[in-house]
Length: 112
Picture 1 (cartoon, helix red, strand yellow):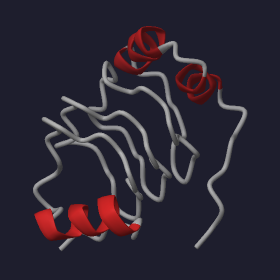
Picture 2: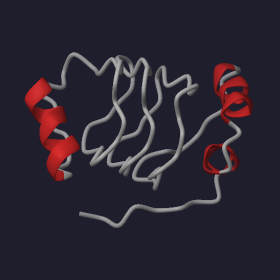
Picture 3: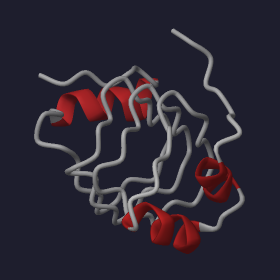
């Protein structure tokens, strides 16, 4: 398993600095952002527009994901250990058991 990375992508840096609404504006206008394998731990992402984001292998430990619609987000290989997930809608390809294992034990989520 690779170590979560912190990259220089300007949109990723917006997320790290808490500029979620600004990130959403750029994302919705079609700006590309590489979020595969990135470190998003402990971030408050509650207002994130996650539609069509590729968060494969990302590290979301203790992130605040409450109320997010992640149904069209690629989370394969991501870890959500200790994250706040109340009201979060996960992709259909992700079983409840798989997300629970990741939440409780930090395993990487696998799609069926």
